[in-house]
Length: 246
Ligand SMILES: [Zn+2]
Image (cartoon, rainbow, N blue to C red; front, top):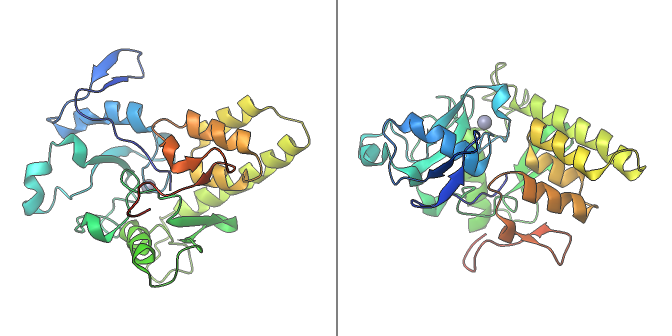
């Protein structure tokens, strides 16, 4: 899952229509935060990474607005991400409680170290994390929160959930273009244009693991990606976000 940097109130962001916007501490109605959010962290679901064209993208309340104890965060910028209807559906995140110390989140952790992506749209806790360790549990909590690993073999899978299939399609596309790139049949700019339009940063980043110049360009061109989560001295491999946790 792509790690992102949320802008802070009083920071400026360039909206899609090229006007400058000053981030506010609160947005009322909260839906008015959608455009600055999209400009800040890209028009993708913060969880499954699908692009906006796939489904209605909504302002996502990390601390659920359906829980009365979080009513005070209803209009608060720092409580927002972007989510598709599936990730935020009642069978997935819905109104589940989020306690930051128990879970990884893409604006607080390097979630590239939490989750591993593979062929077939596979998503799992990263194999570098020791099973049962605190970081493993926090990564698993994130996957479970939004049901990111759901596919037809998952016990709580619903046929309307096509996230795994979209991820698989992105994987196959990335592999196809990785082969073209390897053969010198497509240039870097075209790869990046395609990836940015298709979404699924983590899939492209994983498939292009042997091409640091592609990884660098992905990091630079997906809006809001946190550059410090990647090591330019070591193939842009993900590194810890801070000294205490990933
Ligand atoms: Zn989603």
